[in-house]
Amino acid sequence: MTRIENRNNLLTDPMTVEQKLWEAHLRLQTLYGEQELISRREPMRELISTVLSHRTTHANEEEAYWRMFEKFGTWEGIRDAPYEELVKALSPTQFPEPKAAYIQKILTQIFKERGEANIDFLKEMSLEEGLTWLYSLPGVGLKTAALVLLFNFHKPVLPVDTHVHRVTQRLGVIGSKVTPDKAHPVLLSLLPKEPKVLFNFHKHFYWHGQRVCKWAEPKCSQCPLPSICNWYQEHRATNKSENIPVDN
Image 1 (cartoon, rainbow, N blue to C red):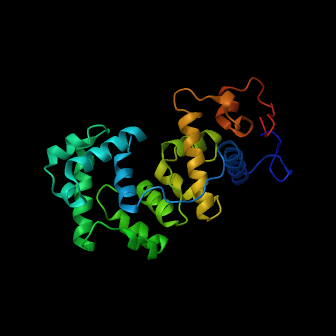
Image 2 (image 1 turned 135 degrees about the vertical axis):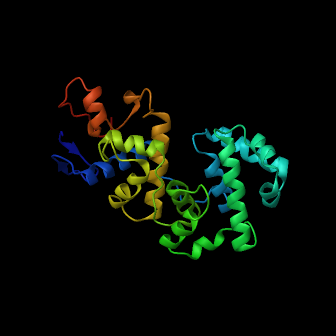
């Protein structure tokens, strides 16, 4: 790998994986701007909306969420709705049938355990306890659990979706056979355990994968990462030793 000047004006030759990831984080933070860690949605909505978001655009996720509430009115109404009618309300999303089943099972379990549709108690739990409880919900995996705990309760955990996974894999930080679930602990081990840092990392890598480092046709000319990106050096660089400045 080529010599790269980092934000502390130190030269690394070559960069370690940890240095590369941090350098990428700094460059993307410069590009997209530092974000405050403010909960965007109340916890129950974040949980159910994240279930709806699987392989679905944000616009379609939002449409399905509001159609569900317009049709059934309350969490109790959604829990008790005829399954086929709930599936129809969720039709803007991909895979509405399993999502409808998961949502009703999740709501049934939460009402049974807590007596109401409220998961604010997770704030008082440790990270490990919160993850364990969320895993107990039907259809809730590591990404959904991590997102709820970071976004709503500011726990030091890192959600890894397809965009975060793709960008870090192309950088060469994680291997080609590392799945998104396996990438969670790997990436977390390389970053400070500070919720705001992890939130910004997730948001910036998510936006970058969505807007620039796309799956089919990455827009490398618009990217600040080529000089530290394995994929670019292998597939796009005309000179494998080219050193693109940090502020490209």
